[in-house]
Image (cartoon, rainbow, N blue to C red; front, side, top):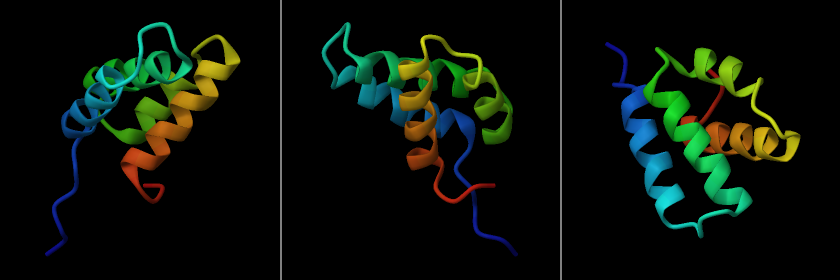
Length: 76
């Protein structure tokens, strides 16, 4: 039996909490909000990563992907 995996909605909740702790208008807030919304509306982490690849501007995309990687742990 495999260990339970954290699903996208759990990860979205974590990203939302991070966004809530960042000042509005900052890179960290924009990235965490993007990750939270993306995770809440996709089926799995690979799909979320693919969606985040289209985020603009580039600095928000990079920060969002880095946050997704931190939240989701090792690549799946």
